[in-house]
Image (cartoon, rainbow, N blue to C red; front, side, top):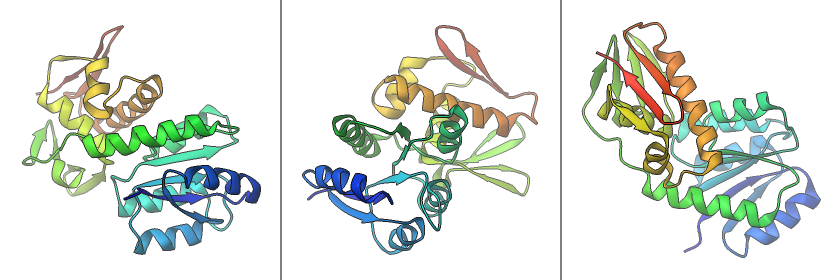
Length: 226
């Protein structure tokens, strides 16, 4: 059975060409605005979402945020003509898996789709009991960190990364090992995504001085925690 993709793009010419190519491999459901895409996501199952950033009614960033509230696991790929580093970082912080700049080749897009579909099937489970890390509590079953009564929601990738750190607390983790464990590859673009996730984890734990994620130059990272 073909994997089902949600594709949101308002440029009719680009949408036709992209959907025509993707439909050779996948079941593609195309939407011309973010609001319709979100309504469909609420009632249908999708294996992956491809979102243009500049969408009418609800832009791609807002759409991704709403999708993540409902599903922390489905892979999201942004497509955008916006090349600013800030836009890419914003997309990744919202829980996107990649940010592809237009114009793009269909071969590249299909390759990325395949990587993310395979990775979503192989992503290591983060299921385990609730555990403490400094003054925080980590609930891997629900992808959440708690500070007292405050709940901080994580994406599945962020939760898996934190679980990997906790399982190897106070031990240096090689960058390649981390990428392979979480994405099944040490691809450069996945490395950039991981850097964004690590940055977010650092911000979450910055109030507790006993917790820090150290960068070990040319090797990897180490979670230092009691």
